[in-house]
Image (cartoon, rainbow, N blue to C red):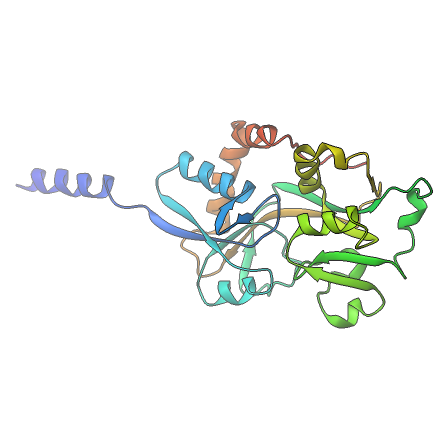
Length: 251
């Protein structure tokens, strides 16, 4: 009877349901992209890889927004956020960081007109600029407040693709765009490459990892080990290659 009970308990534990971990994400191409409520992007690809590598945790994507992401994590609506930087307005008492596993960067773009060169990007004053609401830009001191924006003719929107189109249509002088998303846009719209002048200097280069709520069922250390598995077996490199991307190489 005792042996039977041990076998039963072992069988029960072996088939126990994985612990659910909610992964927040906001529109941040190419990491999270949303078309009519259908989410895709590198964050969701990474979540899929994390689920493939182990059975202890089940990672599920939960949408949030750039401005709401802090409150949603605090309220427990999700426990982990990927491709994030702790300096982007986070309260360090609420989250712990994993190691950095990806780099990103942002550049300015403008419409070529035969006269512009890289000097055009040296002075941002008196030029109309399109950016994304809730993002932290270096030229604004990583602040999203109105005070930081007062010296610039800056319009904040919700769509980076729309900002690129605004430059192409001469509705804005400049747009600040994530480099990987710009590559994807040009891949889908090759005619834009000859029409756009891209700044050689980055507005910022950021180190990206995961932030984990201190109330999360998975710790930052545990997540680090899972991330290492994804990075070391080549599966993440394969995802980037499929999108025509690679890890950022500084100029």
